[in-house]
Length: 204
Image 1 (tube, rainbow, N blue to C red):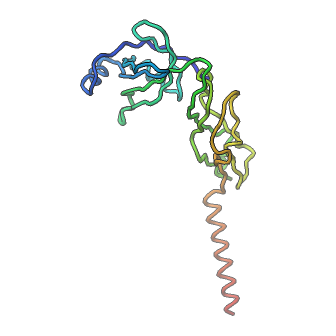
Image 2: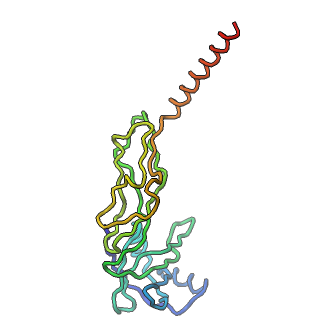
Image 3: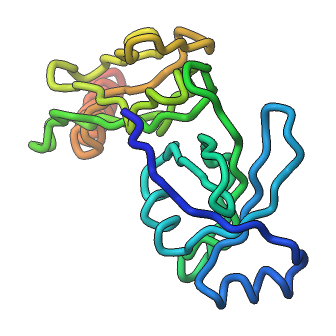
């Protein structure tokens, strides 16, 4: 569930690309904090602490701006350097304890068969849920140990955390199990050979 990360922020009065570059050179990350009817607050976050906190999806942050009142916030959008993967900008939305928020929760397969006898495919990587802002799971595990070739899991089969709500299509495909490619090709080869034999017999 959500771990609250404490981050001290400073207000930012300079804007634009040049100001953003200077902020980053100073070891800070430009960010915007908004939500719950407040005017957007332009802030700078310590780059190292921010990088660590946002390693986890849907990280819940406690932001203190210029030593003032603490606010809870979730990352709404995180811009990263495409080469170095450093965080370059963060949009943060203010949340309140007890309120539900819409978030994408990563899905993780557990007990997948590694023998090669079947191929378990995760058709979607995340599922969108309405959950309490202070009770967001890091991920949801899907146990696929007992699934056989041809079996599927749909959204209604996903074990939801307590209090979580899924508002999408309950029949949306989440996991599917198929035969290994080699087995499929072998079966197709046998069918082709049988077809050729039948054709030869008919010709005779």
